[in-house]
Image 1 (tube, rainbow, N blue to C red):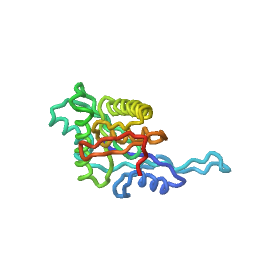
Image 2: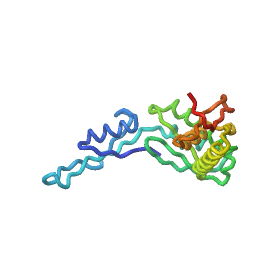
Image 3: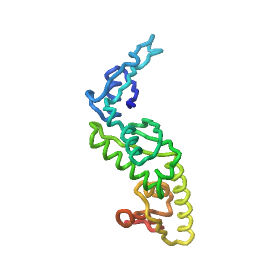
Length: 208
């Protein structure tokens, strides 16, 4: 499956330039299709911009969904993959009857699959980009639980005026905690520890 975006501009060249900037690609790395030429209209009314479609040239064998499918086959997991292209990033959703095998404890297996996939893709690809992997809406559910937990912990810290050190989390999960409490105004967060033992601390003391 090829990835493309559509862009509009006062001229075809302007639309192409916008698309290339969005894709972070060169003219040689994309195929351009002109969807519609610009029209001036009558007395400046009814004017329409130029519209083009820019498609990344990509070897099928190195397409993210192809590589992910091969990874799943090697894990002996039967699955289908849905692909969505959002804001310059590729989002892959795995449809399977055994999502728990892919998710692992707190999403660790899913994170590992995503990390390996990105390493493979960016090693072989002309255009560097981020690929996100999810299954059965796990990422959204996990984020909702973390947001709720962060707010509960913040209330506890405010009530007791004592720091709370959360369990070790992935960088993705820690970021959700930090972002959720960033604008709280009373509690603050920071990370401590190294590697897999890195934790978020929720405190009323602003760090210098």
